[in-house]
Amino acid sequence: MITLRLSSADLGRVRFVTRPHPVGVAALASQSLRGAAAPGPLRHLLPACGLLPDFVTPYQGLDSVEAGLDAIRATPRRRVRADVARAYAHLPATPWRRRLADGDREAVELLASALGGWFDEALRPRWRELALGHRRWTDRAAREWARSGVDGVLSGLHPAIRWRAPVLEVDTWWNADLDGTGEGVLLAPCPFAGSRPRLLVARGRPALLVFPVAPPAVAGGGDALARLLGRTRAAVLCRLGEPGRHTTTALARAAGISLPSASEHAAALRAAGLLTSERAGGAVVHRLTPLGADLLGGGAG
Image (cartoon, rainbow, N blue to C red):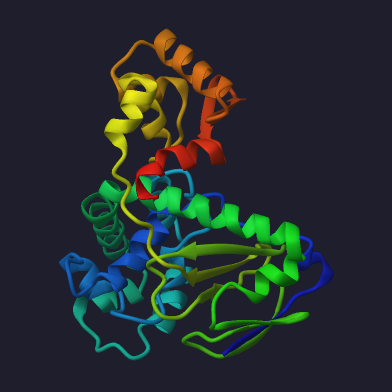
């Protein structure tokens, strides 16, 4: 059991992650789906259940698989050694586990490459459904927040999470009595979190609470969406449901259309309230709105 005492500063910064973390979810899925298909290196390097080394679920890398893998590769050796020592406490030693426990860069690269391959094999085909499921869950939680405030949200996250203000009790795989960081709490629903929630507390960062939720239904309305919007415009919208940074150039490339055409389709979808756009440096970045996410997931009911 972890008890986390939250300050008024923490409670003023409770929020949900904006979308699933590709590499973090891949690491969790390597445990959750291990009996089915998890690749050999992950079966060997990551525990079959319980604690994972904290650095494999980095705060950085929310935008893309590549960014998350780069964050893992950039983890300082001392951090790798500390995280692995804790997660490997009850695992038998093997040569590759010893190398990872020592922070060996080749072992870290093997782990990162295996996570990237596992994401492509197991999660990328369903990533749109996972992202839309996350959006629906957070939209419902936002409505609950509007009705009952932060107390109502924290009290209803999961049976293994209990809110006794100002203390959050989390029934997980390790025991600790911790203070909040003053940076708030990031709430991350995940269908691959396993049977228990997971909590990461690091100085100078918000506490990260990952907790199990039901997996989303598989959407099946792609053809209907194409009939409604037109095939090209539907392809642009579907692309926004996938991981990555969605610039106008990226949308054009994904849909096989010109840059002016992609800009025109994005403008039409924006006018319909299905996406938002903002300039970031020399590019325009597009994101789904809740209405766009609901439309993409319409086939799931």
